[in-house]
Image (cartoon, rainbow, N blue to C red; front, side):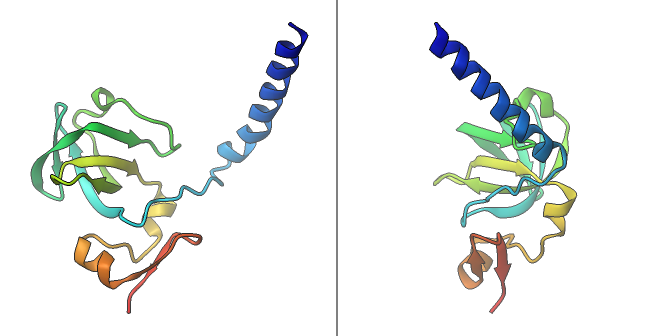
Length: 131
């Protein structure tokens, strides 16, 4: 029983130490190399509009809010957002990150697979450079 109490105390101290960093917005999210930038309108799940084109979300779709926590798609019905996203092999939206204003300002970011193939990605700095 004593070990459980020590574990819970250590866990609460670690959470308290991480909270100020999260509150200040200093968390840098790392997006995958395959993430593209686009505009999404969340309709009644699984329907969405991605870059003006009606499509669907993948069965295992996940959406991350600005705080990087998962958001239920039912909460987003009717919402519009600028996102970085990945798709599955069928072109359905697989994962999306709703961007903060600071992340939106990080330019350039590819909007098509052709741009992503031609540009260079730095995964540490999370920046793209055009050739």
